[in-house]
Length: 143
Image (cartoon, rainbow, N blue to C red; front, side, top):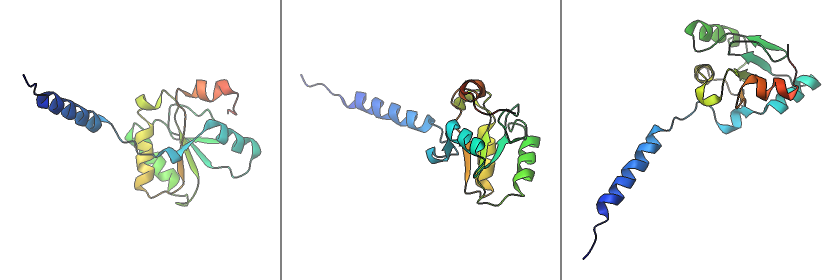
């Protein structure tokens, strides 16, 4: 007796395809993630200091400018106004830190705006957990 595996294979292929379609593409690439240690070094050295913009609920990192939570349109407009004075090649580091990246409501709208405005050297601070665990507890510079 010959078994027909075609229906099972078809279900597996459809399932895999649906999983691929459910994955969200982030508006940043891995090369646009800046490690906290590197930003801390730049702040400490005072050399090649980027513009640092808080797009979350608070201003924690030394030398950063607070915009407010970019999940709100009025703060996206504040970010647009702020960066309109910057060169498109200016190094700009965005950070939030309210929660892990996967849950953060602020980083995607802000980073998408920077992409749409044509900035070429903007980065997202790689805060994987939250600002306390990934910045403050590491002893990095705060306001």
